[in-house]
Image (cartoon, rainbow, N blue to C red; front, side, top):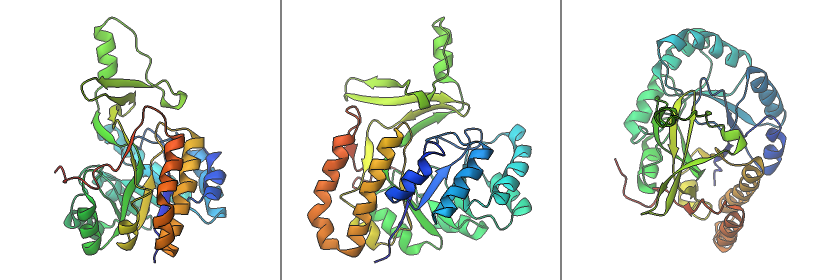
Length: 309
């Protein structure tokens, strides 16, 4: 049975070797200026170091260039995409057609992955961007397993799904937190997620806490629970989904490494011996539950719900 790529989001250059040893096949990195909701911040020097280290281990590197771009940033994309091409990264993740058009002009061989967070909901959309030059489509988090499998059956591009971690529920380019604190007559230091100075929206009625932070891309509100599909991988693997993503935003390096190792074991078991996977999958889930932050419940996202679109 074909094994999907295990795609992981490291927090720093130092994580690459340990995550490679834990079983990651590929990494998503990038700069906040050009990419959305990254687990860590990677400068140009960092991107070159990560690419060199990952390639030495036979791994791939994808750089997120999926921010919301206004006119004043467009000119920067020419040099940035040239740099990524020269750095020999394996793909660029994009949502804005400007990235695709500029990449065609300055780096026509650069592989592109289409990702718009919410609109990857049908195979026509995926194949449309495939015809424009994308090699992969990242599906929306809000569609169910049946829809994911149906899209894969008709897709002419690679298909990526998130199988672990928190998801974005809301983004505004406005500094909502900063505006609120300014209204209160208080100064607000922009949230620094790397230092675990976390803030939450607390919904007492549902007993949920939604992580919220600001960066140069605006205000982000995240899901109250973490997706965890470690005990529900068989149908996705049988459908030959190309890439499984673990999103490590707002998590520690140690947590990401441990989860990566557990999913590596789960994927290998499921692909090589499905019966043994059935026997051991509950234990794998229990291992993740042991290291899960107490305020972050695990669920299966929308995989077993009605699609919300």
